[in-house]
Length: 446
Image (cartoon, rainbow, N blue to C red; front, side, top):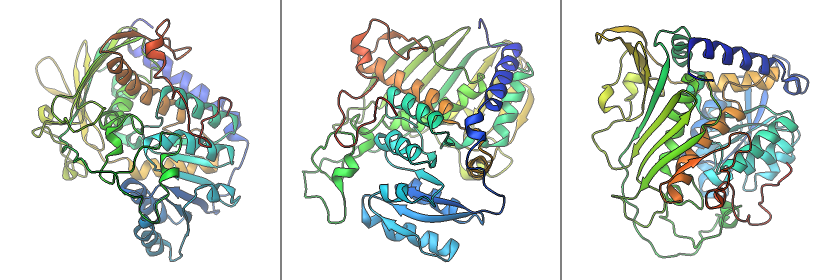
């Protein structure tokens, strides 16, 4: 592909449709009747996990049969949410494997920390469960590919929590670009500007009663327990707070670009300029990803209070953000026109060379339609909007930026076919963990 043109978009769209139609593995097993309720277990009961629990529980076609968390102190709130919604108490289990052993469970919602996403989802696939796994889909590139392999091998519906993929206004933006309204697209810029507070140092303490800290660490190293340690700030457990949030915009940028898989190279600058609190993940990250005919540029910070996430009244109303100070925007540069795009319901506008708005769509959040898509795909066995392979490629971009920073802010060539850095062992060592803590190892053969 030499450039992202209207012809390119159409070609990629047809290819994607053909691939979905050819997914006979998903279309031949476990087709549920329209009146059968989908039985779900939830793994991870933090803020996002409890939110998803509530969203699934209020559906009349879903039963939340299990809630699971390694920390039993989290049980009460999530249990109350389910009981209020479906007038029936779910089973509470500290070990998520008990959900996997129950053949009546159709699907698992995995809202654990990053380092448990792929392993938990792979184990669910192996147990014959469909999976809704939170973003970023993978802790590293190798694990992401293993989850894609597991989804295909076990013929599972695996959807990723990049919910804006299911929002109608996003598809309208894709259609606008496909129709050639922007001309040829050669530059896409992604922004993720936040303000985080520094972590406070706390001495090691005994593990609280009711918290299985060994299982929480899972495949990662079992570091000393400190209750205030933010796992998001440590590469041992996380992709970092920048990648963990910006993957939403990276996913949307890829969608607007026609869902191109992997870039040919990455150049990055990663630094800790402001939040010098013992973290090893950056508070500042700039990156450029090179594709055929197009560059994807990324800018992120954790110390910019004047940049604002899109307010809820804008997401729920016929309004647009103040674009220059929108912390979570995507900019699409075409040879004819330019698009401002906002995630999670921010809508989008297209401006021509006279600064006139020529195309636009107001946004709405994608949570409800995303869950609807997942439930319907459990029934139909079709690939979901945020299929595991798209989740893999969107997470991969974030991993590439991290790796380029960890090897000294270098430019790295990347082979999308082998998903390796040719001749660069110092970069390849970050593709997967050097070792996994048994018994929580992601297997080579899923």
